[in-house]
Length: 572
Image 1 (cartoon, rainbow, N blue to C red):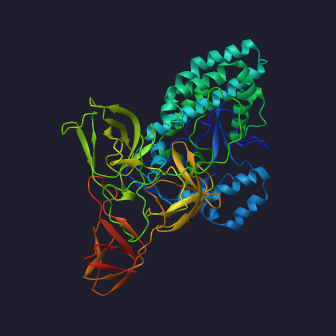
Image 2 (cartoon, one colour):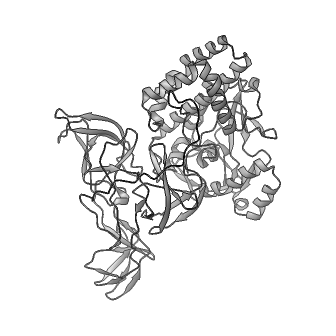
Image 3 (cartoon, one colour):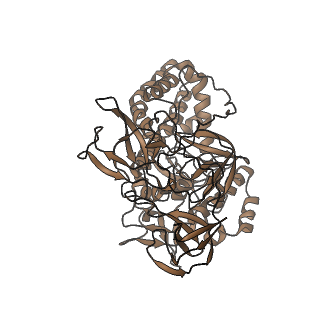
């Protein structure tokens, strides 16, 4: 799932009915006193809502106004009850409501465990710890969401004010002055965080200048393009220009930042049964029901006329280069693909280390400037870095300036320089289509209805082979489009091109033990020579410790056993 962005400006979701709104303070108000990390069992969920700021007052508007304002966990599991609700809703609300229960159930699969003082944004980012999408820190997500709240509110309010003033030259001059004073100074940071694909910072700002400061373009293209899409996005298609003109961008941004900074316990209310009701604002953010974290991206300068997007043509991936130091293959005789390829990684993209590498404080690599060694890891556990810039040594050797985005590692957040040699780092995402891919992530992978990996449709277990129709881009990542039109990540740490032959059974050659984890920390059962074991998957030791190497383990019923050929034999 992707983090959604709630709107802190204007009225929301005014379709054929009036949205249900309730006055709020800037945060829900503390409901829980917490002194130590603890589990909060959820018994009830408030339905997702968006926030409105208009006329100096903060309101909330439920996304499905005529649905119940909250559901118990038992009701979420009762499909007959949910079907009855859907049947009683107007068509547009019924379509929205149908997709909510599955998103809410997915969210509740993991327990709500909070540390003392944990902020709402920390909680939301922690829920994304295993997602390849989460390349931002919590503070960056908070800032990006605030900027998007400002940008969206600015476009709708300023377009509305311009229309109320009669769309005159003087009205446009007022709008341009407001843009130069308020929105334009935020664009550099917005570009830096969002990293729109294929656009440099200068190109991004130039395009925004053109679509706003050129009156003819603004009237002919920006108003119908931006206003209509934003009104549809936020469900305010019935609002008049007078109503939309009341949106307050600066206050919207401020309130978004305040609510993300608020303690997560502010969004939990304890009931008489000892369980908790979770606030709908958090669920709206977590479920991604209000959209992805993409800001408004202007069209390229000189290409204002919107044209239909052509059907993407296959973009064959270059012949894969062999892994310079191949890892042990857990499935012998499989058709692995080490990925990689020539070229420099684009700024904002993610690269993966395929060998032992160092992270250095400067572009000059010495023992004194090295701040961290990263061990050579198994493919599914390899270190990832987002490229934030470039540098060259005095001899012209290229370095990547990077940030560590390994969410469960102690190294997360470290910054510095790594080698740009293709033998050591490779793009994390496939760039070309493959007929089939094999899921290699020990936790499996999901297919989603949306390209931003929201609205989960089904789960693929580790080792499952999936047919691919084509590949598409999403920001600076890629997705495989499956034969049914759903989307699967193209992250090479989670899926591997081709069909891998999975190990199904092993025979014990010498006595071995089964352990609770792949790190062999707790011995549980002994197997004697000659015993046959069914293999249900594989994993590697020390998956989150990037300073240690990886050792292959087989997953069997109840835990993990060695994959060492001295102790076990693969049965083909």
